[in-house]
Length: 206
Image 1 (cartoon, rainbow, N blue to C red):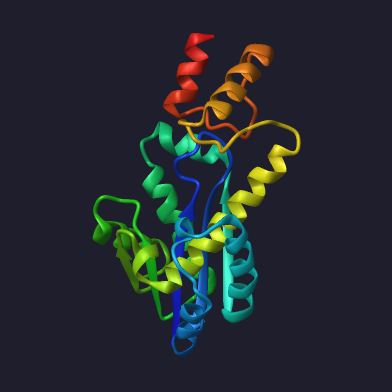
Image 2 (image 1 turned 90 degrees about the horizontal axis):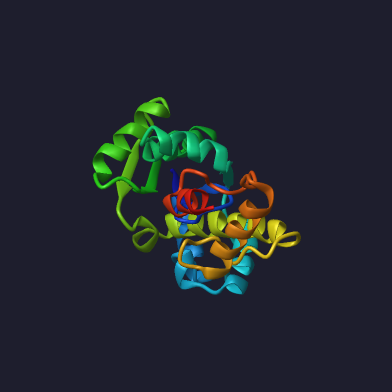
């Protein structure tokens, strides 16, 4: 019995990719993830996440990570369809891993509706969708670690050339970087999400 966990990372920041990750593991091996100390990525230090990332990949039968570009995120936000974009990519992950059942972390206010959407998009795979699934199911916690580490690595790559901060709207380093870049170049870098309200505010003010 193959069980899959799916989660995202990077939904809130103003820059970088939105990452969706999934893992597939035999039901009898799930306790190995628990024994490792796998939990919601937000409760772990970056160093511990990196360590667990490598261990998870060794334990699971399969995994798949999809990165969604800021350009795709912007296109969906313009149509008020960001949840649909996530459902589409989560369905892609489920289809690739082809498990017996998948547990997903719902970004929709209605988890049942979100689960049905993923099921429809993945040729009727069995989906169990919950809020805070990364806190409840260790398979989703494992997926959250893979997603977060992949996203952090993408940001680290960008940081080699730019002083970006964390990418979150509340981070003054991030806001300063985007403002300065826009003032100088009269355009946004391709890794910035132009549809985000704080980004639009920067454009309007400059």
